[in-house]
Each structure stands twice: as C-alpha cells, then as structure tokens.
Image (cartoon, rainbow, N blue to C red; front, side, top):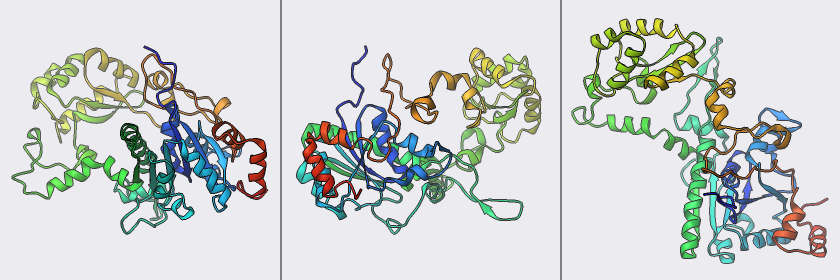
Length: 412
C-alpha cells in the first residue's frame, strides 16, 4: 500500500533554535512536517560552526536545517512577537532549542502561547534541562558525553589531556528523544484538545543511552549473593558493557586478511556452526562452552588459533560465510570507509551535494513501498520570509511592507 502524503504531512512546527539542538526539528521535517525556523535578524551562527565548511556554510547547518523554512523576526519588537503568535495560532508544535525560558522572556513561553492555541505542544531542549544546578551552565555537545560518562580523557605524547575521537551521543540522542516525545504529545493533543509542555536535557539523553552500564554499576552495589555475573563466567561479576569484553575470545575483534572482523559466537550453536565452517570441529569438541553467553574468556590457546584462522580470509569473505553458515560476524568499518560497504550503499542512498550542499545520509526509518520526501537545502537567513507571511499567514504586500518598516524583521 502506498500513500500520497508524507507521514507527518500537515504537522506544522515553529522552531526557535540555536546550534545543534535544532536537530529535534530535523527528525520531524525528514518525515514531512512543515518546520518553520524563526531566527534572529542576524541568523543562527550554526552556519559558521565546526567543520567542514562547504562553500562558506557549515555541514552542521546543511544537515540540521535541511528541509526547513527560515524567517527572521526581531522578537524584541511588538510586531515581530505578534507575527510569532500568528504562526503559533495554527501550529501543532513550538520548539525552543536553547536555554529554557528564552521565549518566555519575550512573552512567548508556553503559558503565553497556550492562551493563543490550547493544543500547542511546547518542547524545550537544552544542554542540562530546565532544572538542577547545571540548568544555566553553558555547554556544547561534547559536554553531555563527558558528563554522562560516555567518554573520558586521553593523553598525548607530551602528557597533555585531549578529547579522544568518539561518536557524539547527547547532541544526537537528545533531539531524537525529544522528537519522539513531541509526537506522543501531539497525538494526545489531537485526541483531547490539550497541549503539553515538554523539556529535555541532552545530558539526560546521554545517560539514558548508556543505561546498561549505569544500571549495571547500580546493580553491583547490591550484595554479591543477590547480583552475580553470568553462569557461563562461573557467576563472576564482569565490568559492565564493553569494558567486560576485553578478555573475550569467542566474542572478539580479529585481524582478517585485509582489515578486521568482529566475531560473536557466544551461543554454543553459532560456535559449532563456525567450527564446522572452517573444518575444525575439534575446537568445538575440546571447548564446547555453555549454551548461552560464553565468550571463552581468557582462553589464550583458543584465541591464538582463531587469530591465525581469521587472517586466512578477507573481511568480505568472512561476512559472506557468516550469512551462509549461520554464525554472527561483522566487518569493521570507519566513518571514512563505511561508504564502500555494500550494506551501507543499499540502505543509505545519499542526498547529493549538488542539491543539498553536502552529501548527507537520509532518515534511517524505511516506510515500505513509500518514499519519504526529499528535503530541500538548508535555508539562508530568512530565505522564506515572504513565502511564510503570504502563504502561511495570508499577509498582503502592504502589511508585509508596514511590518518591515516597523522593524519586525530587523533593521535593514
């Protein structure tokens, strides 16, 4: 079954954002929502942040604000604030992607806007959330990963601490959780007629994404006769998460003939399939292991044998055999090389730089037998001012001109 409209067609979002948290609206825009980014007359300086810079514009802006419309308003003026209120009248969502209370200072907080539109869903996304001792602490994206314990310091050859390479978590997870909460609130608002006020901290999201390690340490604070390790490890407690994988053998990284593979035969059935595949059932007979969750920890003799075996074939060949013979194995890519992986090529038809300013990954959720809308290129400051005022709000040219003269869009 195919659909003529995008999944979120008809959802209107007014977004007031600075920097990366604006990604909360990107998830909605990618699914077809109309997202109108309201900027200050000077614009969101995300366009100048980080690297790479492509034709004078940051990749961060090109990705985060793809598919959105931009209108610049001076909310310090009564006219600019009134335009904002007019936008909210028929909107579903207001996103305040900056410090909590920024819009309230302009008389545009949730309490103000719900008087205009009782069904409005108002969501603030900030660094540390709206409460707690860090609520007003300035921060950038990596702060949420260090706060959440997801990344620690590394040291260079001169003994200086530095930020090690790592995948960002908080700056991506926060917007994702926020978008999910927004949609839940919109569903309820359409059912009950009542809006909601949501707030999310990107730091909270980092901690939640790492719930397994955090909750494991919490569990280990309880008595050892209550909280143990796994049966396959003789019930010995292991360090939580990936830290407990260092001594693994049947679940471990190995050199292949041309790179690395991740071998994951922790179940006995998969281990037997692998041994049959390489013609070494003797390994299974000598070390059959437990039925589940057995990594053959610390078995250096077996690890040396597997090290030699994995070097005999390429990563692609091992991946093919894993699919054919039914044992878990994965190639090891990098952010630079993953574009060559056939699975990546199948799943991520890139948005091309010719149309979008940069080659970008599309939204990862697939709607079967449907194509999600292709987003437009990220806007320049106030690129859609007249379109929004005329088509969305129904203003005529005389009114637009009068508002401009009153300074609603900033001083020219």
